[in-house]
Image (cartoon, rainbow, N blue to C red; front, side, top):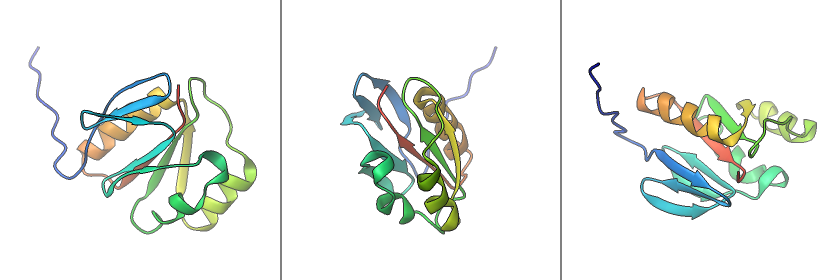
Length: 117
């Protein structure tokens, strides 16, 4: 099997996670957080839509990492983001990390808002 190294020309990959933290571009950061090509920022969880709304127009899809288990996001949270034109996909945080990495390596306009595992 031939393996190729994945390149992230404009973004830092999410390269690890554990209880209460994510490692982005080799640096451990406390969760919850939001990762995008534009950088990494703190995220206040479902009560914090403002930091995510700033991504409108810059990304096509926002992956919501719901923690260790897949869960539904609160309806008001979903509505606020979708009303601003953000497409959201909820999944557990490990899956959101993997999906973000694959799509950002392809140059796609994505971000991930991640709750701790």
